[in-house]
Image (cartoon, rainbow, N blue to C red; front, top):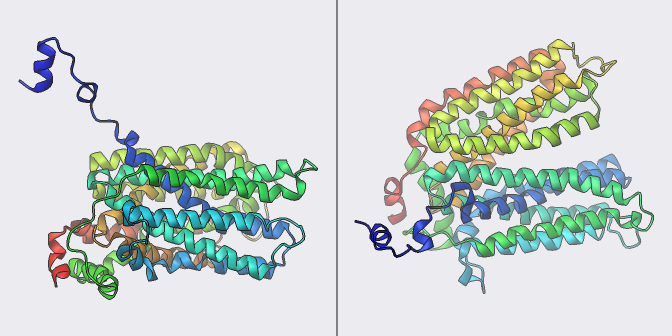
Length: 464
């Protein structure tokens, strides 16, 4: 008879901690920490990719200067270059926190300070910085944000057990999507409201971005309340070794299949990457929807369904396993693109002529609903897949490498999509984007046995 049973049979109440079962997976402390990290990591991205170009255009910058802001995004593509530092070096004075949490806290503090500095220079007042200085400031923010991404990705992979990867990925993706809505649409709505008040009009952008900066403190709360993941034994000694060995592990563990893994990372989300770049031109120009139509449907319904999709994917990953879910999610992203193909065909959308009238909003709703739900599931599954590939001894470097490879695929497919639509028109283009799911899915059988690299597989690399 167990302790609890003996206490109950003797009439003595069992301690509450013993009576209660384990907390539900999504309510565990580690999941709540990952939610906060996903949010705080998403804010610098939203600032660089959406808010800053919007403010610059509204402030009257030339199109050349607005275009230059894209240069500030480069650290996200090259973060693998300094990722080994976060795997190897401790932060002086913060070793008591542990390496991962210390790096997270420092990068979050840097993001907070840089967002504040940008906020104070985002209105037409004396002393505002010029475009070149603002570009440098934004570049510094992106550098800090990319560092937070590196460590956050590593923390997520190390603090979870493999069976929790799906749930952890879904929670992290949810936090990032919340940052996209609150940081993007929420900030713009607040700015527009403040600009209608005379006393606040000169400070509208400064106030809105300042509040956004303060909201990133949620991530700091998560870091301080979270636990430091256990470090895997056998870490390399010396900075040079810590740079080389993460790549040695991948080569040793994957062999010739490493090239297949890189191709998979580049191609698996090809349907989303192709269609995503052309969805806005199709909806705005080809189908005549207004920005308000798209905003309400995507931000209202789409936001909720994308979170539901991520949560559903986490649940499916825990029950059906990663490989089976990769097949399912690959099919789903093709299905979501088929919705846009049907929409373009039904209302004769063409790239050569702008729509004379707006297509029915009722036709847009199911397409965006399917896209959002499937997109949340695909994003969660893909993140869980990359987490499973990384060895826990060098998570930051390996995950940064995989996301850099993924960024190459995103950039090339996005660049090619415009040429394809121009040559093929919308309906054939979306048909091709549906078929584009095949190459990535065809690679799954070639990598399925290597999606989780055990420590024993690479032990000789670390000991050598």
